[in-house]
Each structure stands twice: as structure tokens, then as C-alpha cells.
Image (cartoon, rainbow over the protein chains, first blue to last red):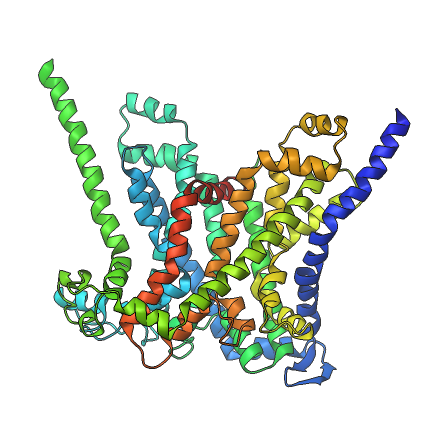
Length: 297
Length: 285
């Protein structure tokens, strides 16, 4: 019996190695190694045009980074986007989920409607909304609507006060359908007996929402907030397509900053220090959120 | 008695009616930007901005497919679609094949270093692509892969999330089922393909669709490594088309619609797995 086990175990180890090696090799080569190199390059002066002049400069890149006004602007913009888009999008998604959670006939059609923006990519949506946001009421759909309501037209994307908010509004609209699907699954997990009991006690719809639905969705809400937050921190496509980070850097984000410094300016070492800081922020956020969303029992 | 029943009935009908009406109104407002996009894609250029302040802006009165023809000739979209499908197909083959084997080993085998690998997979799951894009680009250029299919495909075959999903799914398969196959003299690989894979269609479909959607929509990485015109992917091509003179809004709208078609088809045919994938990722946390 022992012998059989040994044979089986050795057999298992070699087989497991064969099964695991390709994936693990690729993981190390294309995720772990680049990650280590982000940190490694960040302590070097490394310009893409002069790779032979790579010199160790300790934390000089970080000092320069923390003194750069543009970096702090990008940092602020990213945090602003995240802090606003997360509650807006989560609330919108929850509202939509409540509208279509019931298992009635035809509800799938409405769910598809709310999910529809998810079927187009961020690039597509950004191009479409750049046209919709056009400041001229005769070519921009939204401004023409404002005009027919007797309101002033708004320079959505060309005014630094409104540009980021315009991107936030669009992003929340595009993303809400995804979170809605998660909320629907969460809502269906709440036992209907709770609602029936509340009805017997004469609870109003609002009371049911506050005392049954929201507590029942607690872990779903936490999860949705977490993924939306991490997604929001990576904002790049919308400002790249719509505003090129402008006007006056008002929509420049951290990832956009890394891209500009690394790929446009060619300061690879410096850009890596920004990437390392970005990485630390995102990982800290995920870990804190994970700790918070962990069930207590 | 009967009047009371009918009043309850009536209340039910009214609330049903409000449910449909409310959803219809909110739904139409919600998708109106997309309706405008489709309508504009069917209009001649001169008409797109002609009736902005009336409902007619949503109705293509002189609908034609000329804009779509322009997209096919000016953008060479067939080539773009071919590139995109091709790169995604290669990622999918690699992902579904290699990561499911890895997930299987992590779920069902005992071996040295298993805990370490599992921890590595979970730790790398939070790693944002944006934090490693600079060295990854250098890696691509040192391998001579910039502007080649390899740069789009190979870095995206290893996926921690896929490995994790496969592992979770395979862990729930009863050991007896697998041991029965061994007793019948079947080896590990054969057991995997003849017993495990056929009962795991759900997880394969879920990983398939999440992968497809992620890469169909991906802009940043193709934008960084695909500088040549020949091998552009769909999002890149659409973005470049938007910035290329002469700007024909009608043709742009047609291009936007075309780029959404595969996603719509995917949603129609694989909705169950797509929604399940989204929802299950939520429940697992």
C-alpha cells in the first residue's frame, strides 16, 4: 500500500510540474519580471533614446516626482475622478438593479437596455460623447437639448471646470450596466420570505429598501465599490480620446502622466518611479478594501 | 367582496403599468446616445446635424448604407477585424488551454511549491497592467516583438484570474470521479480531457467570454505596441479614424456601430455565461 502511494506521489509531482510550468513561466516572464523592473528602473536615470547611459541615481526620480506640479495635478485629478465616479456609478447601478430585479415578463429587455452601453467599448463611447458634448448647440446633441430648454450652452470638454465632470458622467453611464448585473445577482440572493414577513407587518416599500434590501446587499455593495474604485484609478482612455488630458491638465490622470513621461518624453526611469507610486496606491487600496470586505465571521 | 378583489386587481394592473412605463422611459433616455449613433450612421453627412433640436435627429429619413461602404473602403475594416479576431483567438487558445491545466494541478494535485504558486497567482491578480507597461514594452522591444502579433498575444496568455477561476471550479469536482478514471487505467492528461473538461463547460465559457470582451475592448496595450498601420486592432483603428482628415462624422458613426457588432452577437449568444461571469466574480469577491 505504501509503495503504491509513493509511486502515485512521484507520478503526481512530475505531472503537476508539467501542468503548472507553462503558465507559471509566462506569469513570471510577463508579470513578475516587468513588475520588478518597474521598481529597478525607477532608481536609474534611463532615457529611451540613450539606453547605454543608464546611471544609478538612488531616489532622485522620486524626489523630482514629488516636486513636480504636474504629477500632483494628475494625482488630484485621479483621486477626484475616483471619489466622485464611485458613489455616482454605484448608486446608478443599484437604482437600475432595483428597477429590473423583479422576475416579470419582459424584464430581460429592460436589463439589456441598461446594459447596452457596456456592449460598446470605452473608445467608442468616448468618440461618441465627444461629438454629443460639442459646445455648439447646432452640432452637439446635449447642448441643443439645453438650448431648447432655454438654458445656456456649456463648453463641456473645453472648460477646465467641467471637463472632468463630463468624463465622470459619461463613465458612470457606460459602466453602470456592469455593476447592475452584480447587484441583480445580489438582490436575488436575499430570501423573499424577509419581504413577505415585512409586508405582513405593513412595511412600506421605502422601509423594505432600508431595512431589508440595503443590509442584504452589504457585501455586494462593498465588492462593487472595490472594483469600481480600482477601475477608476486606471483612467486613461477617456481623457486620451476626448481631451488629450486638457484643458490645462484638468483631465490628466496618473496613468496618463506615466504614459506621457515614459512614451512621449522618453524618460523611462522617471516614468517608472511614477508607475511604482501608482502601483503602491492601487495595491494599498485593494488590500484595504479586501480587509473591509472580508466577512467578519 | 367582489369590489374589493377588483380594486386589488386594479392596483396590480396599475403598478404593472407603471413598472413598464417607467422602465421604458428611463430605458429610452438611457440608450438615447446609442440610438443617435445608429441613426447618424445611416444618414448622409449633411443630415446628421440638420435637425438637432427635434426628435428627427433620432430618425434617419434618408437611410442608406453608404457610410458603411465608406468605412469598408477607407478604413480597410475587414483587415482590422481579421487582425482583432486573430489576436483574440490566439490569446483564448493559450489562456483556456494552459491556465486550465495549471488550475487543475493547483486544485487536484499535491506537490511541492503548490502553496507558493497559489500565493503568487493571488498576489499578481491585483497587479495593474498600467504599472508594468513600461518594462513590458522594453521586454517586447528586446525580443523584437514590437509591431508583431506576439506582443499582443503572449503577455496576455498568463492570467491569474483565469487560473484562479479554473482552480475554484475544479476544486468542486468530486475526487471519486477522477480516481475512478485512474482505476480504469487512464493517465492524468487523458483523465483531464475525457472526464474533467466535458463537465466544466461553464467555467470555460465564462473565461472565454470575459477574455473576449476584455481584449475586444482593449485600447491601451495595442496602442502602445502596434504602431504600424497593417496590424491595427479595432479600437486602435477606430480611434485613428476619428483623428484622420477628412473627418466624416457619418462614417465614424458607422465605424463605431461596426465595432460594437461582435460584442452584441456575443451578448446575444452567450448572455447566460456572460452575466454569470460578471455575477459570479461578484459573489466570490
